[in-house]
Amino acid sequence: MKAQQLKNAILQLAIQGKLVPQDPNDEPASELLCKIQAEKDRLIAEGKIKKKQKNCR
Image (tube, rainbow, N blue to C red; front, side, top):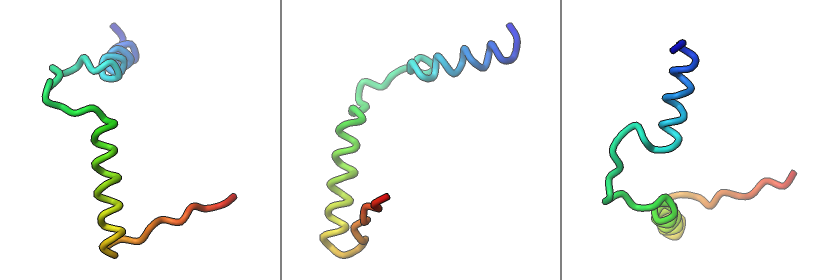
């Protein structure tokens, strides 16, 4: 197997989540994103960070 083929095979396995055993205790990405958004909202409400303004283009 050539180096490029090996690299592509490893990348494909990584994308499929097959390089390491999956942890059944891991939460879905959607739950993690909700937690991050809640933490961000809390920090904005406390004045610790500023709300990012959307740029119009």
